Length: 111
Length: 114
Image (tube, rainbow over all chains, first blue to last red; front, top):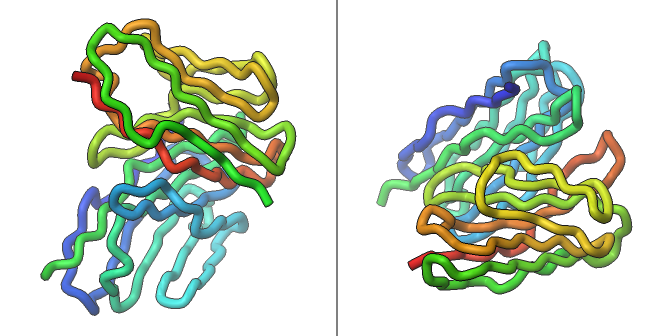
């Protein structure tokens, strides 16, 4: 079946360091979405990428969608304690329009 | 504006007891509705989704069931809970249009089966 692989599972960074998470789909996607889940909370939508090669920025967050619409990345510059949480990608299947979720990357800020 | 309500927030149930979790959406009509489960520290597992009243698709066979008695009401049930049913249950909705599938999540129910 269709899968979206997301790596790494965890990333420990010092505050101020950068963070990146990657998603790779087994099939071409219609779009890809990114969500953030704070500890103890529910996933909250961050952004949606639709076009091949699209790059979007939200302050210190940069989102990219690959040319083949099969991979995506989220990069956070100069992490802050407020960035702590788990970041999920979710790709929309072209066949049934359902979201296929990555397993998430947990961002941990080292004390 | 649209809102989604899910309750209860936490639940502790004994093994073998029944379960009923309810989710309602306000401010939109004909939404797609979803039930997800998230094990501790893990990703989201889609359990059920519904594109209309009485229409339920199951993604994973198990002892859970879902029903949609009204357009904006989605219920997750079990006749007899297992220990493995413990987890964080999330209800979500999305617009019906194919180009806008952003999911809006409820606050979640943390279920512990003891």
